[in-house]
Image (cartoon, rainbow, N blue to C red; front, side):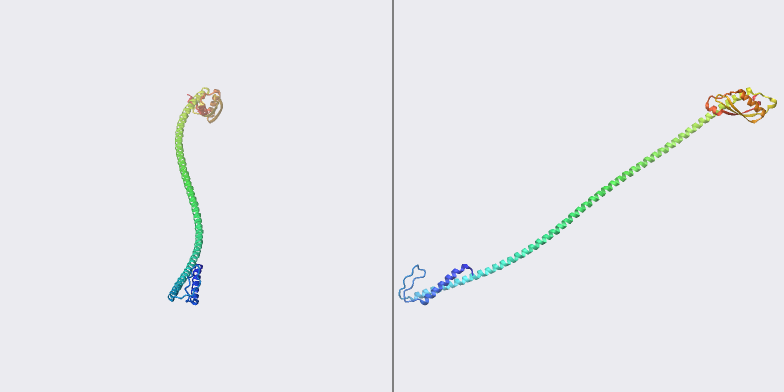
Length: 300
């Protein structure tokens, strides 16, 4: 029972006790006593009791007692209701505490799960970042490899173009060289032909000149040749004469022929001493060693 209801209950119980004592011990022949609420009590006097009043008073007391009992019952009901309410409140508090503890456990579990989820998310994020880093590195490596490949391809293409250009240049130069060689060969051939022509013409000229000087030499020998028609008729002799650039006779070699004619021809050459020769060195080279046939019959 709550402390705030103890005082009214004790007061009600005291009033009921006082009323019981009055009813049991009171002398109803004396005048009625003053009410308990009076500040001062008059001295008890022996008076005649009015039974109607007493009964009325008793009824009032009974009614008051009944009212007090009702109040007590009401109070007890209120106390019981308060107790039930308190018990309900305690149960509600226990339930709330239970729910609080449950929520705390759930919160702890949720926090743990959130922590684990966060750790898992952090790990996943770390893995994701690592994968992104690896992907970025792989992309960069692929990009670098592609750039390197493109650069190598460009370099290879440039080198191939340069090689083709050099090959074309070399081929052009070779073609030009072939053409120049052909032209040179043609020119040389032309020059050779011209030279051969000139040489031939020169040779012919020289031979003509040599022939002329051979005739002159023959005439010089003839002037010093002693002819014996009886012994030399129809006979001849071949001589080989070596000359100095001045025409001086350095040597005479007798070849085939008649001995008498050969001796006479040799003597005639030495008597001439200096024979006519060309001042042209090339013509002289052709006639520095000259061979001729001496036939006395031809001198006439």
